[in-house]
Amino acid sequence: MKNLISTTGIAIILAGSTQAASAAPKTVTLVIPSMDCSVCPITVKKALSQVPGVSQVSVSFDKRQAIVTFDDATTNLDALTESTKNAGYPSTLVGAAN
Image: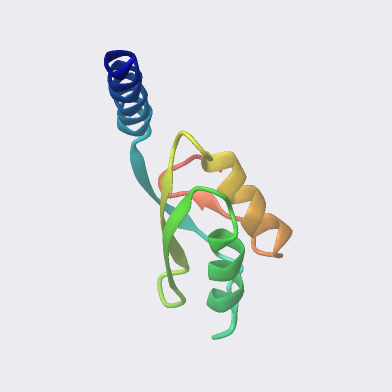
């Protein structure tokens, strides 16, 4: 019985570590040209931070950009751009064709 419990525990630990290893953090830069005041970055940062899977957000008013780090197993670029759009600030990936 001890061996069965021990083996099961190891299998659960290994399964958990496999899932964690498959989720890779990804960082993207979004262009947000409609930010036109110093309060806009606060709104954009709040919107992006509320997306599940987002771990870090940095918004630059001067550059009209947001740098976002997220778990690509939990969310994706579409969810990020949708969140800024819903907050009133449409965004696109840096370098993406408009």
